Each structure stands twice: as C-alpha cells, then as structure tokens.
Length: 214
Image (cartoon, rainbow, N blue to C red; front, top):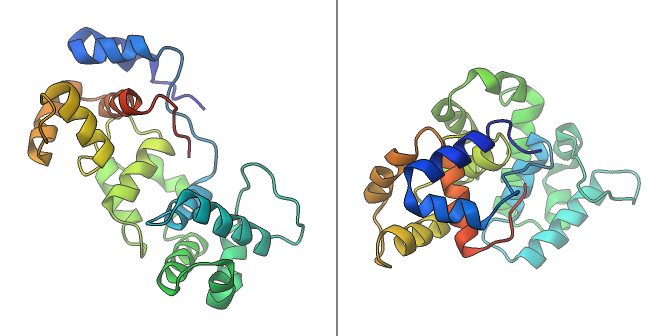
C-alpha cells in the first residue's frame, strides 16, 4: 500500500534539494509499501537479525508451518500472536531459532497477546512514544523500531541515523564520499522535515534500486 502522503513530499523534496531532485526523477512511480500485519512484520524482523537471508527464510517457513494446522503457506502469511505464544520455547528452538532469539519471538507474542502492544492505539502515539513501546520487547532495538515505523507504519518523518545504508548514501551524495557522523546526518535531515522517511527511501534507492517491502 502506497502512503497517501507520498506524492507531496516527493515534489517538495525535489523543490528544496538538488540531490533529492535527481533521485526523485531517477525513481518515478515507486514508493514505500507494506504487505503484512504488525505482528508478522516484527516477528520477521527479529527472525532476520544477524543471519543470512537464506537462513532466515528457512527458519521463518518452519515457524509459519509450526503455527498452522495446514501445510499450505501463502506468499505473505499472517501469523497469529496467540498461536506463536502457544508454541513455547522448545518448538521455537526446533524451528531453528537460537535460545536467545526464541525468547525474543516469545516475548513479542506475549506483548501482543496481553495488549501491551496494541496496533489500534498507535495512531494516537507520536514516533518517539511508539519507538519506546516497541523497544520494551526483547530483541527490538531502536533501529528495528525505526525500520518498523518507516516500512510498516509508513510514518513520514523517520530518520534512522544508525542505518549503514543511509549513512553510506548520505556520504556519497552530500559528504564527498567521506564518512558522515550521526550528528551531521541529523543536521542534514533538518532540510527534509517533515518528510525524512521519503528522503531516506530515495537515498536507499540510490544504492539499491529494488525497493524493500515489509
């Protein structure tokens, strides 16, 4: 789903910033999109932490199958937090999760089952409040929370300054190839407010033209 706000910031960034004008023109007709529910997106993010894409995909498939009575698996399956919570740590370990990561997935499921994380309440929360709520879950740090706000919640003004891809792209286009400190990236991002998510996305596209969906 394309964010309803997307077209305006693309035009506004192109008007304000010469680099953004070039990047927007280079990537027409594409945008941020989301394809899954909140719990599934977060569980998938935890699954993929610090392992290869191939390994994460294998573990994810086993988790989905373990949570379902049917062996049929749709392209983008929606996971039930209660079903994942009911599996228990041994079943998560059997699916391929490490002991620590199994506790992360179980803790995420528990937060959704208990209502400690309730997507219905998130519209009333600003970005920092939602990041604080998400990082109460074991295994979700600020970067993972920011990626979730950007890709799933489609929040318009997220600037993940610790993201290596963003810093690399910013250094390439604004720093003459020299490494850019987080503080310098924050200062640079001020020219993109309140559309820093879109600016981040276009900078990512300059390194990898294939959009990522969560």
